[in-house]
Length: 107
Image (tube, rainbow, N blue to C red):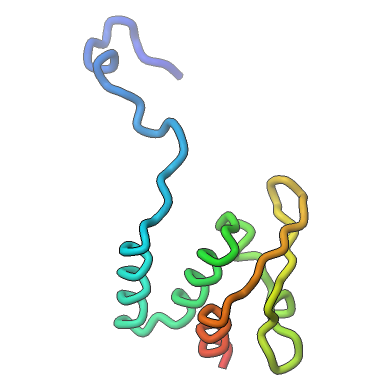
């Protein structure tokens, strides 16, 4: 689907969905965390922290199982996930802050 060569408005409009998105700034990350804490959205906070830590795509993040991040009564320090898009295994470290938010959610 394209635009008509006779549509003047479409020639002046620049494409908005081209290129990569800018990453969140530290200020934006802390603002999101503050909002999630204030609203008592424990699950969303744990998933957000895990997403920031792992840098996984959303489809890979929601497929993570508890056994991928939990070993017995403790949260693992490292996790392995096979990416859906590339099929490659990714290893990432789970920091102490993320482990704490995951533990709060899982309790």
